[in-house]
Image (cartoon, rainbow, N blue to C red):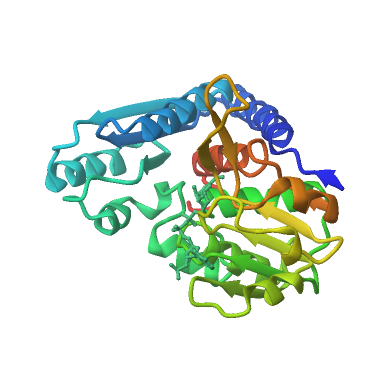
Length: 293
Ligand code: NAP
């Protein structure tokens, strides 16, 4: 069994992006600039936003940090998005989700200029991805594809089972895995809460991608020996084993599943570090006008 080390790939990609940014600066181009909007002060969102901004600076980007109180109106938020859309100094724009209930996430996503949509959530990017046209890919699925590519994991003709069909993970990763590309060219089955015979379906998988948001849901009896297991889940569970009183767990029961696998992503240190670096890769591509003019 080999562990897939997302933290190491993250650091490798940070160095690659930094090198490209220095090259851009040497050629008289400006540094890529990522604008991040946060609404409210939810603790998890603040941690994600701070970490995105910190990594921006580590790779030589500039950042535009916009924070609003939770009671901002939808109209005020949309006005700010329009202002940033029109700002030629900003290359990428993300709005940290979730948003307070009185603001429509779909309206906000659609308000972002698709050419600056480095989260890859805008319907134009989703549609272009589905058609295998150049597009900003959503960060977590893009990060998984990067891991498969960098570990030279064969996907062509393999049975890939995806657990979960969310717009941000399950659905886009199943599209990417079935595309005519490498990685890709897999035979994909997508499962959700209404699927029957989940264990039998999972046991068919050469590659099992799990994004269902249920701690330690996938157990050893769901695994085909030699399978590649990608665990997207993140759960902060109470624990007596750590000083903090918490332990991070995935959607996969790692201790019993890992010995059966050829490759597996740990939690933490697997898919998590790839999400943020994929967002920055998209911002680099935006700054270089590599997806759209
Ligand atoms: P989500 O929006 O809650 O979607 C969960 C999916 O799993 C849904 O499609 C749901 O089916 C399905 N599901 C739930 N219970 C099931 C069951 N018992 N059997 C079969 N399918 C079931 O979750 P998400 O946003 O995709 O996130 C999934 C997990 O990944 C969470 O733990 C999240 O924290 C984590 N995550 C991690 C990263 C990262 O960077 N590592 C990024 C994003 C998310 P229905 O559609 O039928 O409801």
